[in-house]
Image (cartoon, rainbow, N blue to C red):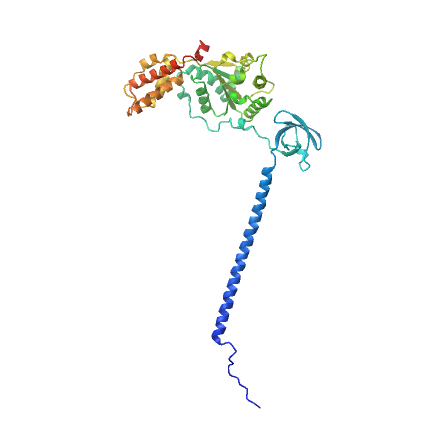
Amino acid sequence: MGEVDTGPRSDEPRGDEFADLERTIRRLQDEAKDLNHQRHELETQLRGLHKRTRRLEDELTHLKNPPMIIGTLQDMLGPRTAVVKSSNGTVFQVSVNERLDATRLKPGARVAMNQDSLAIIEILNDAWDPMVSGAEMIEAPDVTYDDVAGLNEEKQLLREAIELPLVRPELFRSVGVTPPKGVLLVGPPGCGKTLLAKAVANSTNATFIRMVGSELAQKYIGEGGRLVRELFALAREKSPSIIFLDEIDAIGAKRLDGSTSGDREVQRTLMQLLAELDGFDRLEDVRIIAATNRPDILDDALLRPGRFDRIVEISKPDDEARRAILELHLKGMSTRKVDLAPLVTSTDGFSGAELAATCVEAGMIAIRDERTHVQQRDLKEAVARLLTKRVHAGGRRDPADLYA
């Protein structure tokens, strides 16, 4: 028998070759793990991108949809049929979307309707009109009664009619009288009507709601009256509260027979205001302050007792009041050797706003001369400038003539 050769064969790998193969295999395995990890990350990113794409497509489809009409539900004629009044005042009989819960559809509910078919698509949450909800003052003004000079009697009348019924109602019950519902402030521009209202807002803890009369004059039929209703409904909900209607002559002018459609809508708003002031619904802890510089054009129904029980006339300040106003404004200014007596005499006929403007103008003159204090000559020159402005505006009627 032949001998068997057990020595190493040339075609078998050596030990170092085995080590190289093992390293290569481990490297390839690590690369495979990295590639799998990267694949999982890319798949996750891809799923996220798909979701974002679908969301953007939905948003794009939603943006392409026609806008919906806002209306008010008047009545339900059946499970899926309703009568709705649109925002422009037109009344429609419409269908109700099948997916809506018909039990939530109550008369007075705000709904969104399809622009083409006018079908009710959504039921909207009840909310105040933004113009009404924005009228509520969250932060009280920084004006106090001490900042209102020369109107001591007017401040007393206003506090008795507005603040006292809210703070101490038992006094009125013990005497057996109904407290005044509202106060009407009348007087020329710049004499402190709005300033007094700010002081009331600062001194009381009641909710203060302010609105300019022109904001209640709306274009579409019924919109002005709706705003008035919501304004007083908000005041009742937030009571005790004070409503301040500035420039009330914008909606409170005398009603005339020959008028345009716009005038008739303003008159409807006025009638709604009259109903709220002295209607069947009691105002309870709600007080009204109104201001105007044109009392001669106000409707008689607005001025009768029971609506504005107290009319406070704020005229242009007399000598004593002008001195008090000048002292108030000059108190915070850097002055030197200022004599108020000639200023009080030379500013005869000035309103409170004009006196404040005089002090500001004097300060500007001192700044222009690079001085840190106001002198007597600065105030004298400021008065001359204000008088010049009044002469240039002489062609306009002085509102103070209305109160002569």
